[in-house]
Length: 98
View (tube, rainbow, N blue to C red):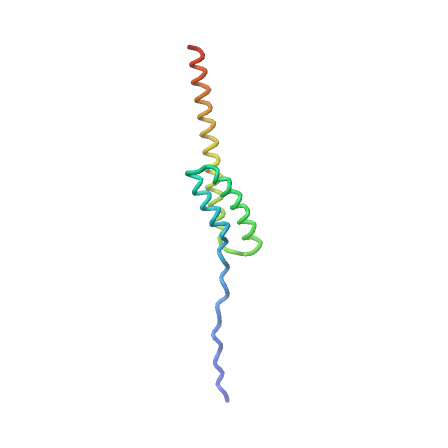
């Protein structure tokens, strides 16, 4: 009876990490210093999540973190602009009464 040696089983390939998700996170983090890059992070984050759902790649957590950080920074910057505008209107109003 011939000896049969079993073939070594190859592990299933692991899904690749979506590079758009990493780019989205990098752009959102860069938005702390350069505000317009937040918009790129938000757009890339949505595109990355769509690609991940379609292809089954990894990186959904990176894309979600980019979206959360991007929207948070956008909200904070809008709130800051509104506060600054309110202070400026108040100061000009007080100066106009003098």
